[in-house]
Image (cartoon, rainbow, N blue to C red; front, side, top):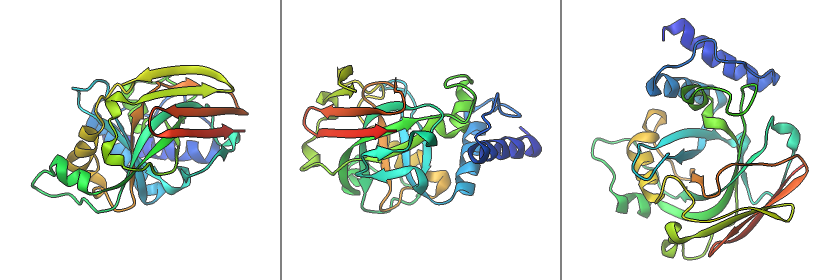
Amino acid sequence: MNDSAFSDSVDALIQARKSRDWLSALPTRPTSEAEAYAIQDAVARRLGPVVAWKVGARTPDTEPFRAPIHADTLFFDTTVLPAADYQVIGMEAEIAYKFAKDLPPRTEPYSREEVLDAVESVHPAFEIVDTRFAGFGSQDWFSHMADQFNHGALVVGPAIADWRSLEPLKERVALVVDGETKADTVAGNSAGEPVRLLVWMANTGAVSLGGLKAGDVVTTGSHVGTVMVPAGSTSVAVYGTMGTYELTVK
């Protein structure tokens, strides 16, 4: 992708956010992960400081993928959000980790123990997935990657007690929407064990934007898939050991 095509794609994503005139496609579609991440990073730099991340993987053994999140779409202990802010409302119940220490880029990889020692707390969380394209899931993988991997908002619940005893692969997670159970799973996260995602973020995923920083939140993928909900609905995430968290989008 040449410089002009790259700039046009970055500008298109920024403009779509401002105008809410959704894109039928990027001016030039990225054809590799490297191109998609370059667009994603350039958009992130224009939107402002990164304060959180989303990370996931298609399977427990495949390379993770990520997207940066900014302050205007990060919420703590919020129970109501305005539906008008979103083109579509895809609810995902997740487990998020908040960091207490910086993990700046370095030559020697961070170990699992170093990454866990940098964690301050663990939280139930909702991610709302959304899109800057005209139609959710309407584009190729790299275009959605460039578009912040369909991020709309991250809503972080209260910290859980004794987070080191948490066993995410054994955690039961249900999503109840307006009283109807839409999903009820154990080990429902396609990425598998989330700590490997945090280690990947420290050593690879966050490096291009300066690494993980104290205060950053990293959410580690949905345990219930993506459940599309209508405006005005109330979603309740029910965790086996982490309690219950509720969000209304109206």
